[in-house]
Structure formats: C-alpha cells, structure tokens
Amino acid sequence: MSLLHLSYVAMLAFCLVGTLPLVPAFQLRVLRQPRRLSLTILMAATPFVVWDLWATEAGHWSFDADQTLPWRVGGLPLEEILFFVVIPLVAVLTFEAVRVVRRRERPGVAHRGEVR
View 1 (tube, rainbow, N blue to C red):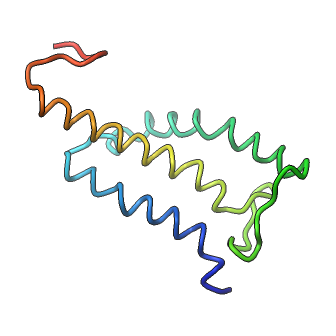
View 2 (cartoon, rainbow, N blue to C red; view 1 turned 45 degrees about the horizontal axis):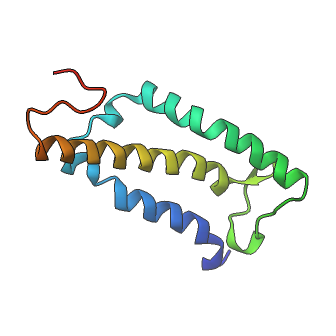
C-alpha cells in the first residue's frame, strides 16, 4: 500500500484535526450527547449512502483503487462511508461553534430558536 492509498483518509483526518479542537475551545457539548449526534449523522448519511451505492452499482461513477484503502463496505470504499460520518460531524461542530461565538458577540439577545 502506498501513500496515495491514504489520500481519502488523509482528507477526512484533516477535516477532523481542524474541527475537533473547537470542542474544548468553545466548550461545545455536542459530543456529550452521543445519541442525538448519532441520529443526526444517521439522518444525514443514510440517503447519501443509498444514493452512492446505487450510483456506483449503475456505473455512474467509481472510486480509484489507487487512492483508496482496499476495504469495501457494500462495494464502497470504507473512506466513502466514513465521509458520510465525518462531514456531518464537522458540520455540526462548526455550526455549534458559530452559535457560541454569536452568543458571545451579542449577550442578552435571544437568537432564533432560543428562549431566554
């Protein structure tokens, strides 16, 4: 296995390394609510995994075996499945960090969906 095989995994790791520090930096509680986070990721990932399975089976696209790990899940590279977990996770973390910053900038002002 060459470094090229790690391309997709490296991109996912880069996303996590750049986003996970938001948890302690902004005291995010997202990871303390694993059931809620899991449901969010599942709801976001499911239609895209199904679509991806269909599209690859139909030959609409494929994955370069030279740039992915050899492991497959239902014909998809493991990294493709992880993509649909990692990207929603980093999106939720980023969204929650932005909410914290907005609250700090405007103390005492209720934001949409927030009760004070």
